[in-house]
Every structure is written in C-alpha cells, then in structure tokens.
Length: 267
Image (cartoon, rainbow, N blue to C red):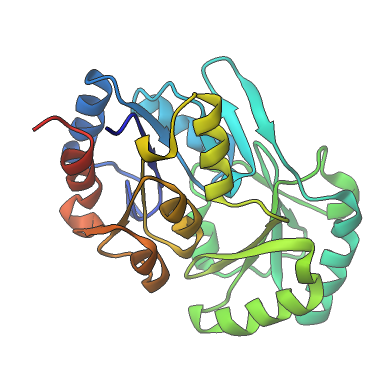
C-alpha cells in the first residue's frame, strides 16, 4: 500500500510554462483525501519548491536541492541540510576559470551567479520565479554555504565533455548529476534524491515499500531505484526509464496523474 508519493517538478508535474494540469492537480488532491502523504522531490531551491507545495496544498516536508535538504515549509524549518564543504569553493571556481564553465551556486533560498556571467538564454528561462543575484566574489559574498554547484551548458551536446571535466577536477569529492539538458550539478558527496527520500521516509516512519516516486531525469534515478515503486515519465531520460518499475505517458498526457491513479488511489 502506498502511503507517500514523491513528485519531481520539472517535466514531471509541469513543463516550461510551470503550470500543473487540472488532471494532475485532481489526482494529487484525491490521494491526499485518501490519506496518502505527498511530497515534492526537486533540484530546485526551497523558496520555489515551497511555492508549488503551497499551490498544491502539500503539507509534508519537501525534498529540495536534489536531496540535499528536507524542508518543513509549514513550520519554516530545515529537518535535514547538507551543504558543499567550504574547502571546495575555491577549487570549484579555479576549475570554472580553467574550463570556461558557466557556473552558479544554489543556497536554500537564492542562486548566486558571477558578475561576469555568460550563461545562455535558456538558463534565464529556467530562473523564472527563482530569486537570484550576481556578485563579484562567489567565495566571499554568499551568506551561507551552498547546497550545490550548477554548470550551465551552452548547448546540450556539451554535456559529455563537461561531465568529464567536472569528474577530472572534482573527482570523488562530490556527486555529479546531469539534471537537465542544459544543466550539470555537483552535490555534496553521497547526496542525491534517493538519499533525501530515504531520510524523509524514515522521519515519517514509513517503509520503503510504501513509497511511490515519479520522475523524468537522470537526477531522479536514485529515488526511482530506492522507492518501493519507481515510475518514469514517458518523456523521461533513458536512464530514468531504465531505472523505473513502470513507465507512464509523457508530461503532455498527464503521466504523473496516471501513476498516482494506478498505484496510490483505490480502484
């Protein structure tokens, strides 16, 4: 029996318009009415994730920063919070200069970009509703340690090269995740959505078999593998679809609603 549903946001609950369809909204509401807990599991920062949690009447703590933090948005408190070590910031920025990466860091509520940012237009489209700022010195001007580093690609074809560069520069110090066609992320070592979902399930006293996870990208693979039932969207990456127990229709056909109806709602 499913008692917790973990939902990715981008390309799972909504597309570039950031609008959740009526059918998906209805499926989430029906699951909650039936006593099933619903959470968000996203790479986004807590501020933006909270916006959608409230919009969908989700009160369960949410998984943000690819599993790096569990945030209780109802009581405005962090239950679990893992940041990049301070000692890695300078090597990251030296590598960014060496390889010409377009970088930014994400803290709990804000994104920090270098003043001389050369990020492509596709990046700024992703930043709608996010709180971001440009600073002269990323190492000195962030008020808190970031949850992750994000490298924005000029074109999706650059992914393999950037992944190899990040692996060479940062090695086993971080977990490297291609999270979007234009994004590759570096997280604290061992952090991923599976890590975050397992932490939350334990906190809620739920068994692994009672968890349904729905996602679409490589970043969702760990939680699809960890959950009792892992569901990939039809528009998902090859890795996400390979990791899933079930593949549902794509975003445009309300695949997330199909998954909720099939696995979490009484027939």
